[in-house]
Amino acid sequence: MRKKYRPQIDVLKPHQLINHYLGETAIINKGKLTGTLIDFEKQRPAGLLPLSEFYPETYRLFDPEERAAFFDKTPAVDDRDNIWIYKPGHESRGRGIKIMWRFGSLRKQYAKWGDRPITKKEDQGIIQHYIKNPLLLDDRKSEIRVYWMVVNLDPLQVLVFPECTVRLNSLPFKLDDFDNQLVHVTNVYQQQNHPDYDPNRVLKWPFSRLGEYVHKDLGLTDAHYIDAQLRPRIREILATVAYAARDQLAQDYPEQGDCFAVFGADMIIDDQLRPWLSEVQKGPGLSFSDPVKRKVIPPMLGEAAKIAFEIRKRRKKGKSITNLKSVVKYDWVVNEAQPELVQKPEAGYFNPLARS
Image (cartoon, rainbow, N blue to C red):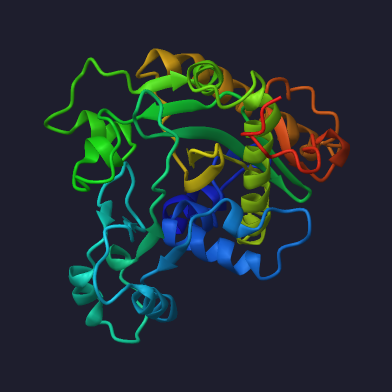
């Protein structure tokens, strides 16, 4: 990643921006995201979410201590209730993901490393506790794709686009048939490239449909779940990730010009309506491949570009970066230049199943 963008960053002109940070691997690589969050948890300031409230229990199998800790806690006799998900650290589009409750082959795979760390990128996988109780939409497992941007590091300024997309699996969810990608891996690429994929299946919902479904179809919430509970919790999760990664994003910052980045974040909502961060992407699928994305991507990207260019223009002229005129639809996640613009959730607000 650093080698890929280093040449462009080294030759940036004062008026130019690049939509990447050299240190963004700290969150877009699954193993490094886990490490970034674990390290930050040790010194997390008050007011930011504890790791256990938004990130499933995860072990980096390339780290000898974490590898030993995971295998020490696996039972001597495999148990179908002890379900984990293995994710290669460097892959995308759901490639290489395995749902596991038997660990003999995994033990054998990693036994050769003993107590040595693994530096080979291809072997830097993580093992993560599988969310066995996902919120089911039309009886199918789902996840939400969040679009957010880090536009400034000092002061830290992070925004999120309020419209997410909802991605569904093709087949009804059940806790078996773990090798069936159509049931367990919520990724459109994996769904559409499966030999048993049904092209008539709807794989995307707009965000509003999620709110309607949990309110009207499932009867779990009032009509304000998305605005009053889900969006505030998403902002809390992203704020914690941004603060955890800020120092690494700032590494080798260009001497002139600026960086910004539009990221994706995938979150799985459980049946208690609590979102869990799955991963962060540097290239969050910006095609207009379906009607849902066609309504989200153009306004999201267009405003992101306007915000980044307004900040660059102001910084170049030595002007304040407060009261940005280009921020219209985006919501502030962090704004150290104007903390009063960040909408804070009410104390004890996150109780989505408590209906009014």
